[in-house]
Length: 81
Image (cartoon, rainbow, N blue to C red; front, side, top):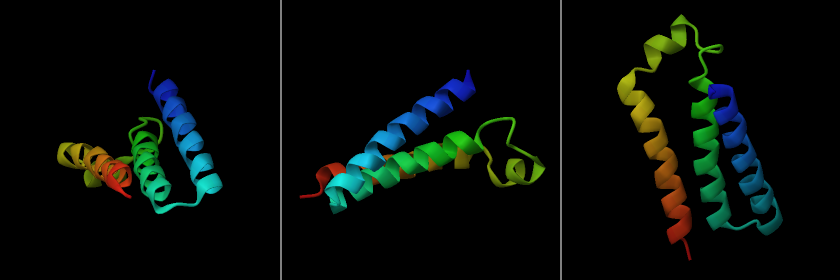
């Protein structure tokens, strides 16, 4: 199930990043950074990739803060221009 969600997040990030490469605007850069944060968080949260070092650094508050940072980047991109 989680692998499917990571693949869906990677697909969305790929679409947004390709549109950024085509348009080259600050708006699309901020939106693609936001989706990139979601993609990295999805990779980190996979249980197959998590070891003891990551488990110590990422507690419950960090798992809530990372998507919030991604949403802020997406919001800044939407409000740009």
